Image 1 (tube, each protein chain N blue to C red):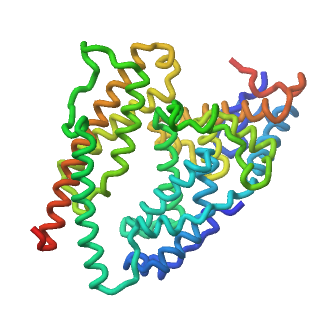
Image 2: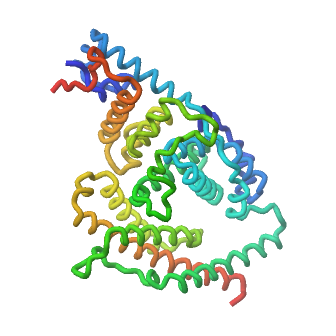
Length: 211
Length: 193
C-alpha cells in the first residue's frame, strides 16, 4: 500500500514519520513523485502575486487619532475623545434598550422559540454594536477583564462548534440552542463592556475637571 | 510575493510612533500594508472584508505598540494580529450565513479574487478559493506562512493532529481540482490500514 497523503506531507516538511513509511517511499516512484508535486505546489503558492492594498491610511489616521501637534492640541483632543465616549454611550443607551441589561441566561429556556434567522440577526446586530463601543480602557479593572475573557472564550467555543460540527447543522434543535446561547452570551458581554465604557467615560471627564 | 519576513521596521519608527508621531505611524502602515492586505485576502477572500479587517489590524497595532515586547520581529507580531483578526472573522458563525441585507451575491466568499486587479487569477488561486474557509486558512498558514501544526492547533483551539488532517484534506482537494486523476497516480489516498 502507498503512503497516505498526511504522511507524504510530513515527509515533504521533514517531519518524523514511521520507519515503514520512509522505507516504502524510498522505493516507490508514485509516492516520490507525489512528494515532488506537493513541494512544487507549495512553491507555487508562495509565488502567487500580492494583492495591491487600497489606501486605508486616511481612515486609519482618523481613527487612531495620530497627531504630531503640540500638547495643548493633544489636550483638546483628549477632551473631545472623553466627550465622544460619553455621547456614544448615551446614544447606545437610547437606541438599544434591548441590550441595556446583561442577560445571564444561557439558553432559550422553555419560552416561545425564536426563529433561527432572528437569532442570527440579533447576534449580528450585537456584534456590530460591540464593535461600536469605545476601545477598552488602558487601565483595566481585573474583574471586568476576567468576565470579558470568560464570555469571549465561551463564545469562541460556541463558534467553533457552530462552524465545524457537521452534526449540528443537521440538528435544528441543537442549532437553535447554540444560537440562543450565543445571543445570551453576547448580551452579557455587551452588558459588561457597556458598564465599563460608562465608568471609563465618567472617569475620563472627571479627570479633565469637567464634572 | 512579498512576505512579512521581508519587512524590516526600524526601532526609530517604533519609538516615534509610540510617541504619537503620525509620520512614523504612516511609515509603519506603508511598510506592512501590502503583506497584511494580501494575507487577509488569502484568508477571507472578500475585498471589502479584507479592507475592514486591515483597518482593524492597523488600529490594534498602532494603539498597542507598547505591547510589542521586541522579542521576535515586529512584522511577525503584526502578522499574528492579522491572523487572529481573520480567524475571528471566519469563526463568526453568521459569516457563513450572510443575511439578505449584507449579501452581495449568492456566494460572496467565492467571488473571483482578482477581477479588480484586471486578472482572472490562476488555476491555483481558483482552487484555493474553492476550498472551505477552514481548510484554506490552514493550508495557507502552514504552507505559505510557515506556521507549525502545533501553532495552528492552538489558533483553532484544537490539536496539531487536527491541523495535519485538515492540511491533508486541503491538499487532496487541491490535487483533485488541479490535476484530473489518472489510475497510476492514485497512490496517496489509499489507506495502508
